[in-house]
Image 1 (cartoon, rainbow, N blue to C red):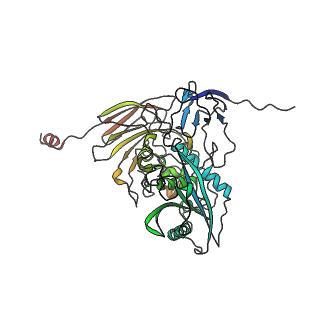
Image 2: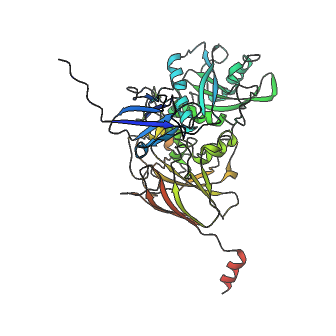
Image 3: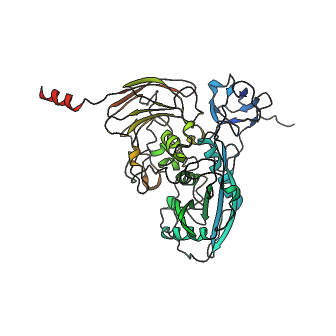
Length: 496
């Protein structure tokens, strides 16, 4: 007698519309922790001609991913499943092609199969931790990463040991062999501005060699992933952006370097020295967030992609909105720039498609021209589900407050333009696994309501308080900015 399969924990029936009519062909699936090699695929529904779908879910499923090329992707919490789910068109949707060069050496060949490399970079299967899924998620459906060319080269010019000081020469060697190459569909956009306009360069050029990632091994005999802007060997007046990395590098390093290249290095590193805790920490891909999703520490041996840096953080609202492709995707985040001394209202999670509520609230810092305060709500959805050593608790989600100083953007050495305010200052940094060189995580820096949480904070002249949260992940926040007295007024007060 055959045993019946266990019944699903819950079923949901819904409808996706364009705001008026049903929208067909929308992919709907539960938002779960992405993995490089997931144990199984999550249930997936495709909406019918009327926009309707049916899904069988598990008890922990509380958010649905809703996506269709050409439409803004959304993450929809359970509180909103009862009504129609409306998507908006994404006018800047495009496909960006990667020109992959696998560079082998006569004394060392690739070990990672081509199929596994393609899965890590291009997979669009729900639940897979891939570069394509990450960029589709953080762009809210605007960027679809596709394979352009896949070229294999072999060189005898760089015998072992191959150290970082040889990377430029290796990259030049590859570029020389691309002279006269017909880029075709590999050149769809302007690499600097993000405009859909060919510029004579590959959208993405990724050079991948055999070997271990120095970012994890800390061994100078290994190579470190890097984004480069190199003059062309046949035309020194022109530069091509490219990423140089080893085949065992984790996903977080890959997309971190990709963000550097997308806009030709307008996106800066946010971290400082390993001992400096006052940066963006885990809250930005361009800082320690590139290592989010870290299950165990084993720097001596790989593979690392399955359990290290497989769930990188989203970029902060500033990086995503203002720096990425030099502001080309500014419309992905609904920003409210507060002009007065106070404000109170709802802030929606920045990971969602923009709606009526602000997702990013900014106030000028009166202590320095150009510097400002940044407030955004972060939830453990999508790739931000990644934990470090399985830890989770107070401060791991909620309101993230930071000071942002654009004047500290640097083309060379990082200067720390983003400083996140810690909701739990003085809390000990966690035990292993720790990020490379013990870099500070600040993983409990978010303000929230609840046991062990901190709903209030202050940074210089700015104070804030969380008043309420709701089932859609929003937070109602009150902020107040105390402006300094004018110099003459302060002098009179001191005289009295």
